Length: 310
Image 1 (cartoon, rainbow, N blue to C red):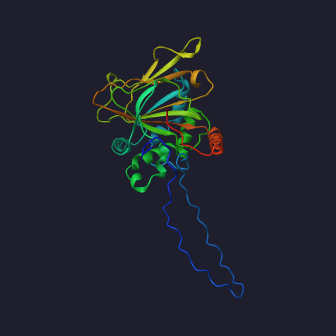
Image 2 (cartoon, rainbow, N blue to C red):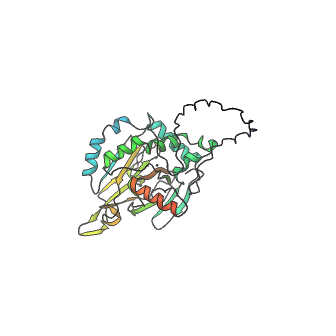
Image 3 (spheres, rainbow, N blue to C red):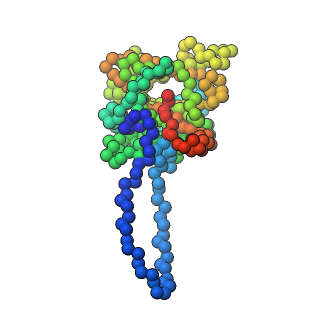
C-alpha cells in the first residue's frame, strides 16, 4: 500500500517525446571555429521505473508529523509487543487524502477475484506500476499515487527503519490493494516473501460507518505453542480491528521459526453482507537482498515487480 489491474507489472511508460527533426548538415567550415562553451547542465530528478520506485521525497501533509515524531516511543513498544514485534499506528495519514484513496480504489481500479486454500479476496495489481501509467489513467488516481510515493519515500522508509530496527530498506515498491467482500478471508499465515523485511497493512474501511467487533475482519496475532517452534497456538493472543486510517506493521525475519517470526497472523472472515472493506498492504525489502534479487532476475532476462502480501 496496480491500476489497469491485470496483476502483471507494466513496462515503464514511454516518455511521449516526439522524435527530433532531421536537419541538413552544415557545410564544413573553411577554418577552425571557436566552439562556445557547453551550456550548464541542470540535473533533473528522474522518475523511477515501474516496480523500482524510490527516490521520492515525503510530501508535506500526507503523513502525520505528530505520529512520525513518536518514532522512539513506537520503537520501544514495537520491541516489547507480543506475540511478536509489531505496532498499530492510528490516524497516521491525512484523513481527506485517505478518503480520496478509498474512493479511487472503489471507482477507478479493477480488482481480480483470487481464491486459494489460504485466501479468498479481490486484489489489484502491483502499485509499482503507477509511475508508468499514461496521463489519462494517472489523472484518475492522484490520491493513491501520493500515498504510494509517501510510503516509499526516503523519509518514511527511514521512519520505518527507526521504529522496527530492521536495517536499511530498498526503495522498491511492493504493495497492492485488497478488497474483502462478504465472506472473503485471509487465513493464518506468515509473511516471508522473497526479500521482504517489513510487512504493513493500511485499513481503508468506511470512515462514516465505523467498524465494530461484530463485523468480523479483525487482524489476529497468534503466538507459538510452547515447545513447538513451528506450530501456532489455536487461539489468538491479540486482535486489532480494521479501523479506518490505521497502519499495522511488523518485521519479517526469514529463518527464524516457522515462517520467520515467533508468531502468525490471520485476517478473520468479513461478515457484513452489504459492506466491503478495502486495505492496502505490502512490504519493504532489505536493500542488499533487493539488489541481489534484481541482479538474478536480470540474468534470467527480466526484472519483475514484487507483488503484495500474497
